[in-house]
Amino acid sequence: MKHQTYFNSLLTSIQNQEKSPNQFLSSDHIVQIINDLQLILNQLSLYLLSSTLTLEEEIYFFKVVKPTILAKLICYNKIYRLESSLNKQMHLDKKFFSKKLTQLKIHNKKYISKSSFYKYYINNRTDKDHLFFTRGNMDLKEGLSSVAFKIDLEFSTYYDLKVAKILADNMFYSYLTDQLDFIGQQAIYSGKSKKVESTTLYWSESQNALIELIYALYVTGSIGHGKIEIRKIAIVFQELFQIPLGDIHHAFHRMKTRAKSRTCYLDKLKETLEEYMDKEI
Image 1: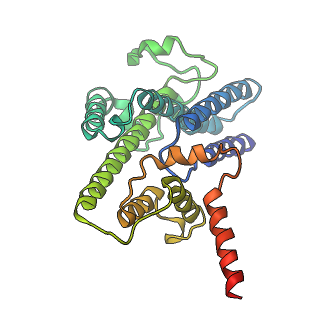
Image 2 (image 1 turned 180 degrees about the horizontal axis):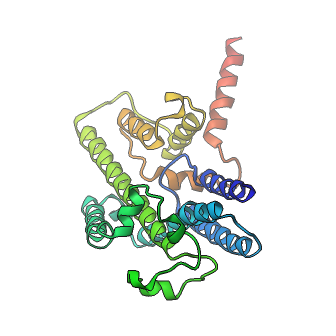
Image 3 (image 1 turned 90 degrees about the horizontal axis):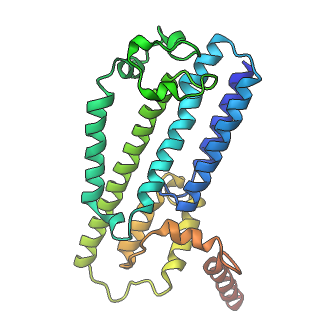
């Protein structure tokens, strides 16, 4: 039981690290997550060498814990490689992300979803867990891929890799659909901005000032009790003030490295409002 408690604490810490005011992470953040996940897997490998797990704990580790961590590592690495290859225009290229999504669906249909193990896993079966998720039970009669002969037998059952691949594909699917949803929202904003004309209601500060304000409203839960995605809030402000904000997440990360105050616009708001209050007195 103590081992499972430790495993769960690791999964919780990883989930906390992933939390961000925007689902689209910066390249630096992705690299940091990848490095941390690699470190955690190395620590777990050493942990298993010095620990004696019960049958239930070993199954839980190789069916849930390790695949969850490895899947994140696989997916984040895939996202990083993809994002690194894109220029600014391609980030809003619907055809590009639609093609990637189609390729993923075709691959899964051809190589993943038809396998007997995939059906076993997604149907939440447990009757063969003692064979799939404990070490030393690889069956050559199953027609294993060449990867099976390269793994660390003390840190893999082979089938934990298969689960990780299934989970990673699901994560990458979500990433691609989120990108397409964002592109669609941007297209809606672009269409509306051509129809709406305003000569009096416009944003007269900088783009970064508005992004700073949007983040402050988001993280304080001032809009929708914090349950509204920040990109949706950004779209509302873009439509309201007819100002394109671009990649607000990258802009936010640049703010974090400002030489002086990281919240210069919010500081200005506070200072100006207090001066106005003093005059009113």
